[in-house]
Image (cartoon, helix red, strand yellow):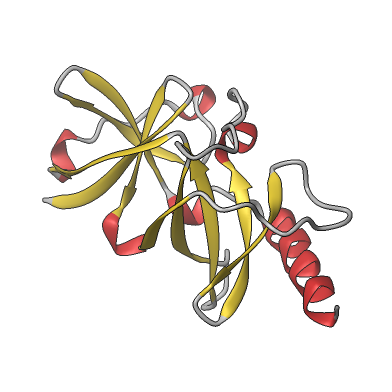
Length: 157
């Protein structure tokens, strides 16, 4: 069995493997960045680094997560595609729910033509339809490069 953290964005429930979750924190206003990607709300500090804050509603083509005291930031540790490097992002969520156990054989795949590449599958948890993310595929290589550029510019200031 694998453990997953569930969170809500608009009316949808998503799950990420707990091994990728670095921290859960209250919403904080990000530092603005020029020439940002549409779904990057700005930059926040995490331990000794600066990381992009992602509005998951915009990224997943849903209703944008409102910047409010109810919003929750989940800091994730992700792998860069085809590289051995990791990078961190903060994702804005409307609410963090539970840590749930999902047996590998209970994760239902979605046919490729009906899903974005970053959905690993679905799971029905207590009557709730949960979309399980493949965290390493949420951002395209081009998006990671653009976020790296934003971070590089921010460090020079």
